[in-house]
Length: 204
Image (cartoon, rainbow, N blue to C red; front, top):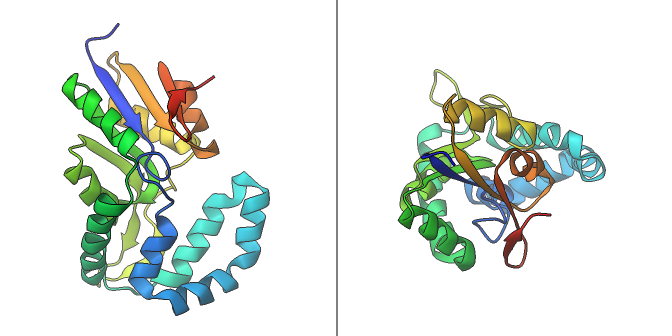
């Protein structure tokens, strides 16, 4: 076994009790604008529900409808309040205890998630993670969001690519925790995969 041990956690429905992208967009733009955006992107969302490969495009379209032109400084303020609410009300106690266990063992902790960096960086700091690999939002020179993602959506194979890039070439024993099809590749890449359902259990 390598001296370096890393525990990689998905966030939405793994560390958190819920998906957080839609609640964050609601906090940022309000329910009426979010509903309008969901209606306008509903064909893409329905297609994504039927075909997992189309989820990235559906997410990008929803971000474009909701956050184009949004002031980045204002979004940071929203993200600060949102992160506090998630930490106090929307974390899984069982998985947070697993995070604490890994920390006590001296393992490195990394979040690998499709959630947005604007709030996930803050949550990771509160939970004492060492690194965050997640989806970011592009900001223009005017300090406003362009409505585009800054790079790829971090799910599926992109999770493995980002994780391996962060990990580097040296040996490491890797634990991975996830709950969905978007975590399948990361679980398969790990030495000790844990599929998180109603309670953490070892993946088949």
